[in-house]
Each structure stands twice: as structure tokens, then as C-alpha cells.
Length: 144
Image 1 (cartoon, rainbow, N blue to C red):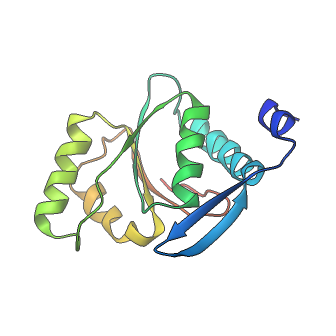
Image 2 (cartoon, rainbow, N blue to C red):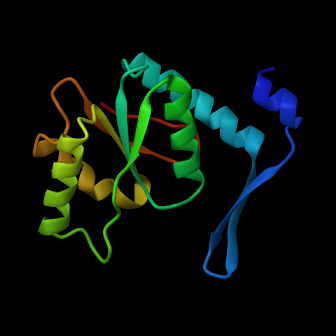
């Protein structure tokens, strides 16, 4: 059993709010378990200390899981800006500049924004050694 589970005894929950209503509650132990699976996948793709990973996702359990998974892999996290209204050409251009300026080797894109994945990859926002991936709230399944 790892240290997080021992210290917390599997207790405690993360509650994600949307407006005035509770959207989802999940135990920290479950978040940590998913983060460890993501860490394993990231390490398998060469992510580790010195790596830089961008996260483009709405606020929620998936984002918290991805942040923790990246940290567990030893990499640095950059939270990328979300579109204010919709992903227009100006937003995509700004996102590409942010990715390039941050020298991000990997960008994980949350499911609601997965439509941006082809635009970012096709535009060369991810280097040839890197890849863009989608993450889901459940077990992470990055795709090259």
C-alpha cells in the first residue's frame, strides 16, 4: 500500500461543484489510483523528470487526476487556457504559441475538447517526438 493510502486510510473525498450543484464526488484514494495508472502510461512514453506536460481540460476530477499523474511521473505541469466561448482560430493560434513557448513535449486534452486534438497535432504544436492525447475520467488511455 502506498504512502497516500496509508496516511489517509482511503478516506476523504474530492467533490467537484458545477454552479450550485454537486457534479461528482470521488474518494482521494480512487483519484490517486487513477493518477498512478496515468503515471505508468506517461513513463512508458518517456515522460519523467525534466519533461513538460500541458493539460487542456475543464475543471473536474479528470483534471485533478491528470495533474497528480503528471507530478507522480516527475514532470512539470502547465495548465493551458480554456476557450472563453468557443475554440475559434484566434484561440487555437494562442494555444499553439503557449505550447511552443512552454516547450511542452506532451499535451493531454480532456474529452470535451478532444476536437482540438487534430488541429494541434496537424499544426505541429506537438513536436515529432511528442504526441497529443485524450484523457477520460476513468482509466487513462493516451493515444499516440
